[in-house]
Length: 147
Length: 147
DNA sequence: ATTGGTGCAAAACTTTTGCAATTCC
DNA sequence: GGAATTGCAAAAGTTTTGCACCAAT
Image (cartoon, rainbow over all chains, first blue to last red):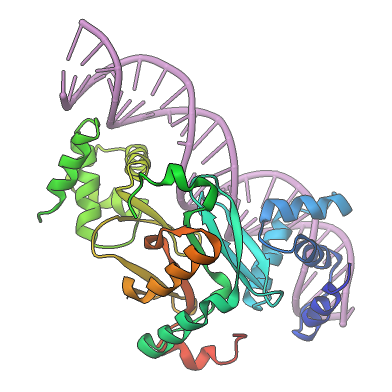
């Protein structure tokens, strides 16, 4: 229940107005500590104020994305999630069998990042990474699948 | 203009009926040599037969996904793309500035794959990988952004 | 006071579904 | 012949947009 204050401050510094709606969206993102859908953010915001409209949530997420305060993650199954940038950096292992999402530490990707930079001149924003596959507990069922 | 015939054969061997619609979807996927949206596949199919319905395209893609002949890729911007599995294996670098999509060779990821298996017991299906970031030509504009 | 932001309703877009008619095996 | 597949139309779900009103600076 702290920490989203600097985010709010950050908004103000970027010439954006500080509205309760925006604060609530930031708070919801901060509380959920990870990937949440627009719908989930909407639900959390509504707990505080049921009059906030979902289009406001979308517009706020759009704004935060432009300001690089939030990133959009596509975890498959057509679900788009959002996450605060700059918190504990991590990535996502998505199990295609059971849908479970594991977090992976960022260091795991340092060497990949270096290679991409050297070979392709590509600066990877790796807070966006989602890796699909098969988790430990689904491993047996998975065995029949290619790769 | 060849090579999708084994795909069709593969369909038959999996107890699936061979319809012109499915053949056209496979052909469209094969021709486009990479990530295409459902809409693009639909357009290609329509060039051959305007009476094919888009719901058939979706149903066929769903089927091919289940058979692991096609994989679904989320390249951001809300666009879902599809790609034949088993062609030249590669991955995608998506530039968040200009939207360009670069292909990356699979070998690049061998060590990452090994690490994930060892540390998390996670079997990565890395034909699904999309890496977001900033391409060489957008690098200058990108410089101001975090990470 | 002025600009920017919000709520609302409606549109736009993508994907899914129920069902009758058709097609493949 | 019989089950699987298709076309259609309609629904469902998500995201965007135009506009009048309201609020933050």
